[in-house]
Every structure is written in structure tokens, then in C-alpha cells.
Image (cartoon, rainbow, N blue to C red; front, top):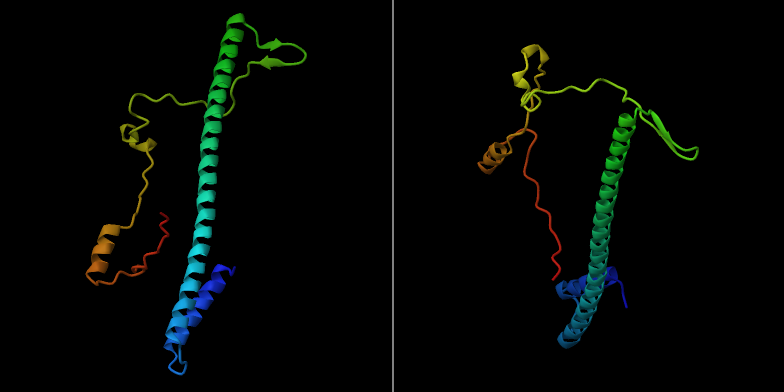
Length: 173
């Protein structure tokens, strides 16, 4: 069986034969050949589509497995964080900085870095509630896409922008 590219070349060659006035064609032989090449192409396309469907199923199964594993990891991370917080509380209550054995031990340490900020209600969400000297103003410039489309539709040129071509996609039934 030919590959998809060879089949396409055969079909193009048949079309060229139709367009060539110097070639005298037997209509029935041409139609039989065309049907054969077309049938071979349909079988090849079906084979490709089966591969695509299998790969899509593999991807879906792996995504579901990854979601399941991520859920389990998140659950275990939460359990670890709760267990560590409990150990810190118990050790602080007992007045111990270090506990455990020679094999494994734990020490309660203070966090380093900058001191955390405690925000009053709403201040973190709306920094305008702070005095002006503690605010940073940023200017955000965005393209007005709706206005650009409106002008391009009205055949008004917009510097640096033009319509592109729509792509295409393959629908598999």
C-alpha cells in the first residue's frame, strides 16, 4: 500500500492528465483508476484517524491519571503541613526546641527574611486606602482591539496591524 503522499501525487497526476489536451483518455479506465486511488486514500485517511484517536485517548487517560496523582499529592502535602503545625504546637507547649531520637529529630526554628505585614481590612485589596507616599502607580497600556477591528472593517488603515487569514482545523467524526 502506498503512503499518503504517494497517493496524493497519484491523484494530482490523474488531474493533470484530465487537463492535458494532448492525452487521449479512456473514460472508463480513468474512472476506474480514480476510484482505486480514491479508495486507497480513504483507507489511508481512516488509518491515520485511528492513530489520532488512539493518541487522543492516551492523552486523556494520562491527564486523568495526572489529575488523580496531583490530587493525592495535594492531600499528602496538606497532611504533612498539618502534622508539622501540630508538632510545632506540641513542642512549643512542652517548652522544647528539639525532640526526637538519634535517627530522626525535629527542631523548632524561627523563619528568616523580612517580617510579615499584617494588613487592616481592605488595605491589601485596595492600596489607595494607604497614604500617597506608600502607593506605587502603574500605567497599563492595552490595545483597543474592538476599535482596531472596527476601523479595519471600515477599510481605515491602522499602522502596524492588518487582518490575517483564518486557519483551518480537522474535524473527526
